[in-house]
Image (cartoon, helix red, strand yellow):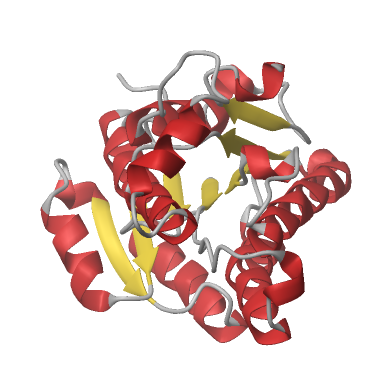
Length: 254
């Protein structure tokens, strides 16, 4: 019996590396999962790759558009009857460039993708979880420290942790725990995008630079982040709320 047996989860950003690994992990732990994403085609491909597909469903929409988030929660309740876990994983890395070269439009686009989507997930989870539950947002080590070149992204991840702290205080009496995960560089497409932007002529130089900041000397994996998310979603984390949980190989220990 899995530790999430009988629970229903909503997972946004399900088509990315962390998202798809998390969907698989939640299903292995016994949960039913509504996987959500912006691209219907990619969402269907993700769903086809899942085991226990009878406990999975899909919902296409924009995670930073409130009407779409409302529809996501309604579809989940209609399909599975309840919402016990919400994983606000949707997000974007944005452009790698110094703050003084970043346009307002690019900055605001990252805040909308990363912060507004988490805000809406928390807002609607609060209304949907009448029996309590867990909300987990995907933040980053860049939400704990500054990282040159990704000012918009770092600002958004700091903001996510602020939302998590406030929501944890506001929702504790309703039995809703709110946490975030803070991955260091993870070996997936988002980091490949950051590496390629940071060092277009030789992305391996950027990868080496990031790796040098990690005590364990390697990038993390999508599965390692998914494992932390599943723990925080489970009753084993019943006294965990309001904090960011690092999955970072020692990045923040320095």
